[in-house]
Length: 135
Image (cartoon, one colour):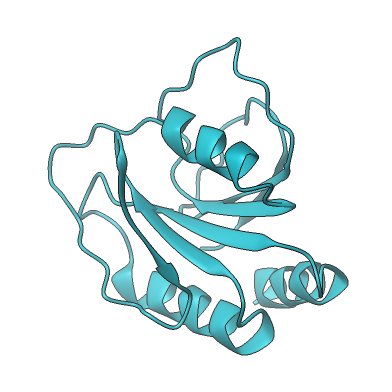
């Protein structure tokens, strides 16, 4: 439960900032209840956040209150489009729920703060940003 407090603190520290929560929807092998609880936390603590559902492309962008998440079975994910979107939208902090096995262009410039929320016991090395294990 340590991650709950850590995530809550990160959200509270960023009050008034432009925040987005991205969910890697490339596989159904995720803990859907865990993800729903994270979305609910964002809705309560950072209600102006945006929810981005993406796999190899952005599938949906909605206000955080909407939690109808569609998962796919192909297992292909890319972070490029979400990171480019975050830059265009001037997102201050992007939280990304993923197993960190997706692709992104190495030349990609990331101008926002990124937290990788990893819903697994194994936490791989992230290319940039910080990791929070949420399992």
